[in-house]
Image (cartoon, rainbow, N blue to C red):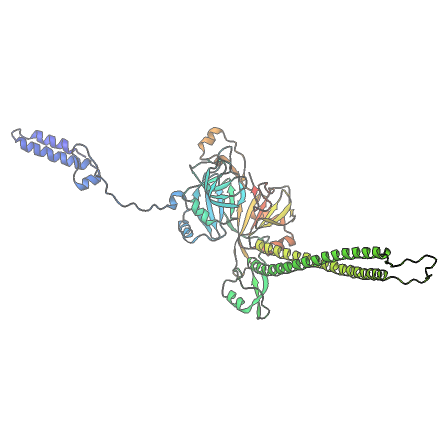
Length: 552
């Protein structure tokens, strides 16, 4: 573009010098004004004014500050075509069960619910020397404002613990590469959202590379066992109007005075019924235990009093016998000589001797009565104590039934370990049952696979499953220069194909009938089956974790 100033100078130079100086000055001023407009930013050009020699932008207008809103896109990435689902899930909440899959190689975490992918976020895992372990975990603790017990009380907002040794998901600095001491850091804008999505026990899978749950079916996977329960017709009618697989209502206890109807309940609903019955039994058993205790205490006091009375009766008899053996002498006014004393071959007992003998006889009768009373009261006391023990045992049993019902209301987890050659069942983080299991070709690896029950059929007779197959990772053999070029240290680890597919792993397992029966009685939404080469991790606690499997 031709410079207006240069053109103007050429034009002026070609004109006669006789023109007035006023005309020249006017023309130059117009040219300089046009040049300022052309070289100024658009805002100044639109306003039509500015300094001719150095542009000065106009001061911006003061506007009211808008309330800052966290844009999910700034802290997380959604898969193509999934943005609508993620936004919908944020508003209405995810459909349980929710699972978290952390990809160490990609440094991101993906959230899935029963309907599939929900959202994704960046993370920062453990740096060299403090690698985040890969494997199968679950959330075993949650705290909004937690501080580290290891690193000088470092803040860990929105902490969700996955091991008792210190690994957790929490808000922190996410620089785009591994930087933590083993924890999985989440962006500050995303950590509260994830905290609200998850529940205790939510599955967490930490993988060397990205994996995702896929729809899966196999004949070996168990199905829920629906339980028949007699309920009042009114309650049954109300329940029938609702989903057939929902939890049992609060009033499902049988009423013998009302007409009843058979109702099929899923394992969780049946657990609710069992709990109500156990609570009623516990109340009755506790009342009986209290009454038996009072009766035992009363009987014990009476037995002790009978023992005291017996001791007293024995003492009285001894005293009476001693008195009768040495009665007091009878006083006499005149003592006759021995030669003049009458001879009495059948002397009559004195009144004192008669009284002493009567006292002995009375003491013996009292003693026999005390012995009989003691025997009776002691037997009653022993019987009362036995009745109390029985009542206490029944109350304890009822309490155990409540605990069992509460346990049955939680998700069930099953682990099949090729290393240990056993199947384990846990529910509510407590061991339920274990037994040996047969795996064909036990020397050949089977991999690590997680099968999750995500949704029942309309009648509850079947379960929809998803499967996750963990990639097997091998240690990196690349040079330090190559590792520096990679985005993350985990990205330099090469993933190899798993020894078995999810279907192939189940094909090699012979599940005993009793194991299948036990699982079916407990299985419902959120239940899971883990098949792995690995043994149970030492990170597990006897009654405070779900199964933990470490793959690295």
